[in-house]
Length: 334
Image (tube, rainbow, N blue to C red; front, top):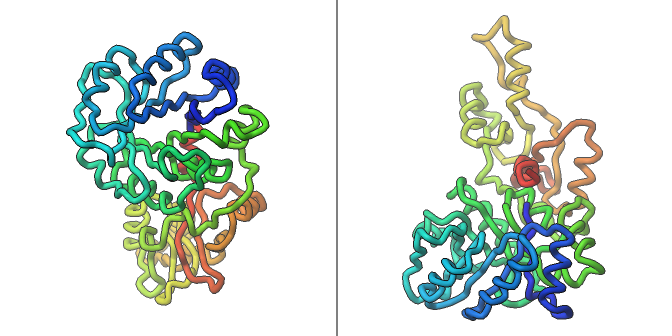
């Protein structure tokens, strides 16, 4: 996941000093907020003289049309327009080569992106826009998951409340870029803050249930109707490489992964017509409690003698609540 540094969040230094510090620490992008102020483009012209870092421009305006000629004259790598402020159609000329994004605040549903399906990404504002140092609203975890399911080919960017813990969760969810402002500049150094945003040593404020895939979105089979074809169909539908196995009360009974099916078929190869899917169920999978913190989850993973790609999530009584997968975490580090 790329870190886009919000340059105007540094209140103690000149713009040039801020940019040089960020460039020296190899930040991925420079996030430039434009609250309907065309003078921002003069800053961008200056930044181009100081470094070659990509510009991530976020424009908040009622009339985006007045910015199109400026975007042609002063090209940027990413440009995002705030959806809620628009008072005219948002039409970006083909001459503007920047990757295009639509920014939405927490209450706005991701379905508004449908009108801008030719855009490259969505920017989810996880705190109140323009307020530095806000707390990440956990409702946005669900919005990210919903958007990625609805628009799998599009990227997700997040702005607001991104600290070390939130950064880890966003990477795990497959977010492409996170904007960081006050967190970067309130740290002892930019380098220290960047390290916190990309390492795995974190403090916990969120619980697993805040960002897990909920049960209603998980691949599930029930013991009472357990059949090989049904199990394979559910694994295929879920696209996660496994399915949860529940009893009729939704209590977790185990999981069946692609590997479990393969092993089961090999063990029963000489009697395939009578193959028993029940023998393929892993009755004691590694699992995590829904009230566990991120740190506790990482400790569970660390104790395992084998790589963990997914964790069933259960409540204190063993009833299934959802899953946490780690496939996106690997992808987001590439």
